Image (cartoon, rainbow, N blue to C red; front, side, top):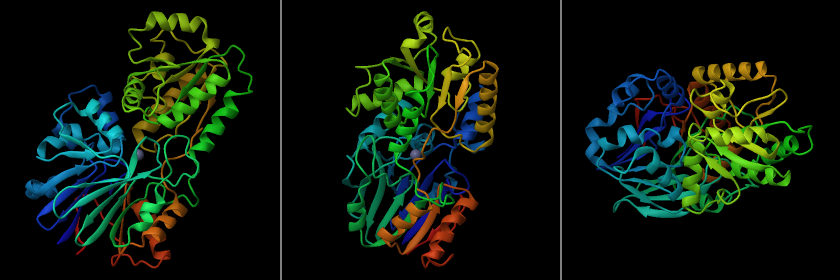
Length: 434
Ligand SMILES: [Zn+2]
């Protein structure tokens, strides 16, 4: 018996969680937060516990698998983004099994979820035997956080390939390319669970190299004079942060990273030897404590590049606090504010970002928006993936109905038939595959 339980990420972009039941055993793939709802609760400053998060749809609803909890042998995590691992903190204790993932992701989970989580690390491009019947292979892919993987679950029914959050970057700026060779070797894919986040984008997702060139174009050669340079991106995007650091070296400014989540992600990456930012940059996690230092930096602002948290206008993030005059570091007219991120299209996040932009305009700053390339495969990359794997069945995930339908349409173009070998599921539904 091979059965899929869609638990989260099938009605929305986020809170990814899927359970695969294989005879007498079962595996959970990802356990993520729905960021929009999570941020909304955070901003109310109210109490936060599993029940509240569940009621507000900020974490997946695992009710449908409550009777098979004892069958679950492992929680497998693809990468270190909160919409894939952020719910571990709230939900993993229900399951008496280890969380299995790559070293960088494990390090981030440890910081996010505490020491009570039993973690097993597996290097990228390596396999782990979960039981006599199930083996998991963590295949290296390019995305927007280090050590991202596609997981191949090898079972007696064939391979189940869980391919969320990846792109085929031919010129990554950090880490190795997507391991296409390994993907080509899998010749018995019974089910492909695929990322539909960008399935409606009719193109290829461009390389991280392009984002670096865009940043360079802004930071080198524009009329920056003595103006402040503020950059922001996703704190987990170590490759992007590295590009920013390298460019600031070429223009002779010293890099300062400001904000707790930046400091956390950088520490995780340094701990397992992916980067060494501390050697060249200053990293300040607690800005409140560093207010005296910020005052000195503010007076010599032309010597620095400030990489800050808060590109999405989050309430307690550094950029928001600067623009609200809560810190000694200030924004002056003509300062550069470079948003090297996209605005996640959900209501709370969009509203927060609008407020932030409005306040920056009041300060007469120069804004540079969407200096970014996505980490998600677009329609034409997905076509390649389907061609490489030729799965018997496809299940679109990580998107609402419009997005999963987009991927289904692509499947139809490639000879699949909706309801027969390409399946649209909603959270809470289960499906027999074999
Ligand atoms: Zn991701």
